[in-house]
Image (cartoon, rainbow, N blue to C red; front, top):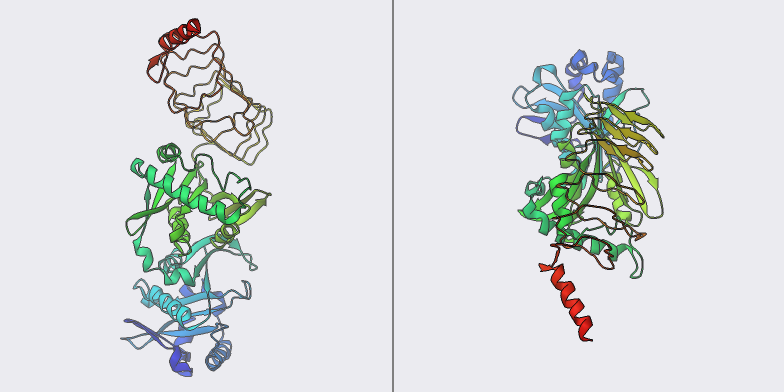
Length: 493
């Protein structure tokens, strides 16, 4: 059995331990560079002898359905024992989890042997056993070990405090992703361009229509996650490309989907939409896209997203990617993923607070970051709020007076029953708005809109009363001419 457990690479060989390795292995366990990171290996000779006997005896009982393997790492040229590598349970983790662990002598580091050993054991385990996923835990200060597991394809999921009261970065690699590493060379995630808008709109329509057919009956009403407002609108995608971090997903040079990220200040981001055309789903591409995009925002420590309660496959997909469900309703599930320590910011940051009826007057709040705040019935006046961000905040009943909001972006908001008065709107661009589910009509009084341009708008049942229409055109026809023709038709009746 031991011969089948030998794994040869160009520079090193992973092989079963033998009694003759005792002295070299004991010297390795005397290196503080190893035992400071792996204190369990700081054994007496008697303890190490017992452990070696156990390891050597385990080779004959090797079970592909219950992986427990520890191999010696030998340098091919020097014929020296330089470390070890294995996949086995860890008492700090769930009994079903299998962790990859390794150590290399201080005299042979920074030569790629650690990465080579880990990649070799992964190849063996995923090809020769029934194991479907492998975990790695790394202490946050151990940057070298982190680089090794990341090079081997592991994805960082979260930071955890285990039963030894020590924090670890938790990584995971699944077999189906490992098998697809070569195929991922054809996957590209790049910032979307305005030229992509039409393709993205068409792909989202196909993808979301397919999801509606899969999860809903014909007469069922879809929620906003299964049927996002304007999901098939080229204008909506154009807006997202201009004002958010929108990425096109390409496979072998062809756009197959997109992912829209809303970067909410110094440490939060939201996955607003992730879609891949039906023909490319189930191939592991979505997991790679999430990992690639998360790497583009290293300052983000908390990722959030919402998905329809109906899409059960989405729930499993996000949970496998490290997201934890934070709430569930009849129509929507919310998920969150923590990926690291919050980044420091030079600007003021307010988060998860209740500031009901708070008053902000004569305040310098340039660049302030407000996140997940209850700011109901607040008063904002005479303040500098340039470049401030308000994300996931309740601002209902608030009053905004005497503020400079030049070049502000107001998007993805609910302004039902709000009042907007005494506002200069010169150069303002208002688009892709609607009357919400209630369909209560909007009312304009004493507004100066001279010279404004209304295009592609639904003006059905709009009422204009006591308005100055001089020079107004409808489809390039002067209103005066339309009224003249109308009055003439009345006279002829």
